[in-house]
Amino acid sequence: MWPIRPTIASCSLKTPPSYKEFGSVSPWLTVQQRAYRLFMERHEDLAAFATVVRTFRRAAGYTQEGFAHEARLDRGFVGAVERGERNVGFRKIRQLLVGLGIDWRDLGIALQEVDPLPRRASGRRSRSSA
Image (cartoon, rainbow, N blue to C red; front, side):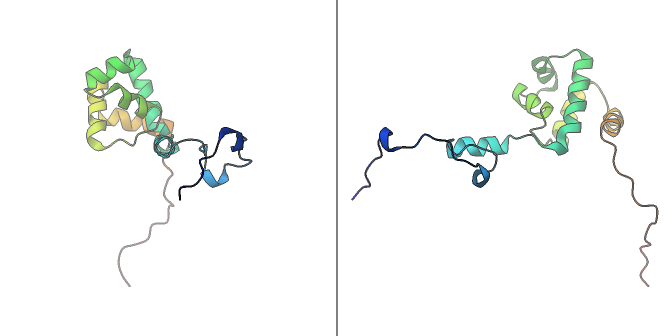
């Protein structure tokens, strides 16, 4: 036998006291909405790249739409890159650079200024086996 369908009067509309078991998303979202939000969250590792792309785009005087057209990319993709929501592969970075009119060296210098890489310890281990 089918379970009895709950009525509005029998449902509690109170928000649960903690979202810990759901992560940072609301339990009232559908599975698809939860998956999309988790997938599209901002990644802090990509923040430096996002900042550099946005800075170069603005310096070139492009809107996101104009830049996307110039780089032959989707405007939504460019927006996601600038928000740090998309991890960009080699080919897409190359398209972004062509659209911005800069080379790899300029990108590397700008990234190093925004987010310097940590230096290795000065004591190098030798590769020779003893």
